[in-house]
Image: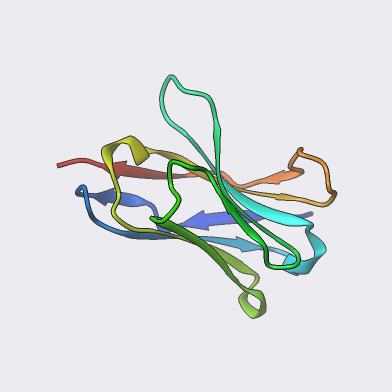
Length: 118
């Protein structure tokens, strides 16, 4: 059974940084892509960043230039480095992984809370 475990959330002031980690129970290369989603109260879930098996990365416009997704294959871990955080980045962040080329993700983590507030 595939498991995704997020960590690294917390509270930070505007302009601060956090690094989220997503550790998988299987080799990252078994997935076509791993992504980070977020969902704020009362809002739809938003795809924040993805990294595919070839290493290509994509970002939502709202986080470009501030967030960086990366991976450590040996540690089965995908990271989301978040810099210059803003109050509107406050949300529960989820790690997800998909096996195929379609848009649907097959596996999800439990989520980690990120709160940006002064």
